[in-house]
Length: 238
Image 1 (cartoon, rainbow, N blue to C red):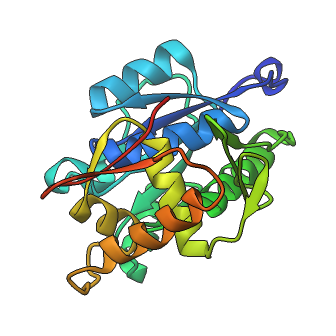
Image 2: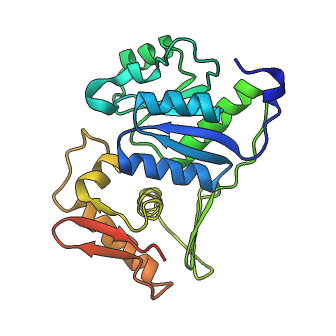
């Protein structure tokens, strides 16, 4: 545990994401940094241990399905590590045994993938309150060009006009915007929003992209979402 002096948190709080999945990692990192956290990504257990020792994050968000089945071993930090952050485990396995095993390894919370960004942020803030007895301001608004995505209040505005999006459309928009400039394949989008076990219609991603694109363009002429033929989609990055 950290010393009482360290409990006097300064804004932004420090959060480390441990994941070898680039789309998931970048989406979570963007959400954290748009909110109340300063975030870093560690791709391996060794990077995580070094980051904990040198940077002393308050919260570690760990993708326990990463690294070809290493799973819960990601949470077992090397013995002698002085600073142990609060831990939130991410998993695509919703079975009770996986969750119980994670809690037995010492995690503070478990979030099942796919998840909505609002839920992850709310859980991170709850862990901060429980661990450090500190309330951290939550004001995550992502801005790209004329587009404003307010996670907390579930508002999306383009050129100052509010867009009426479904919950899935908001999640899709945030996923694309958080990875602005990067190609997202249809399989990556399916895995992140519907889950690895979802049996999709052949055009489910294309259909939701089309609906979202129409709503965006009804308020702004900017072509925010570009189609990369045969591969997937890329969001405008300014």
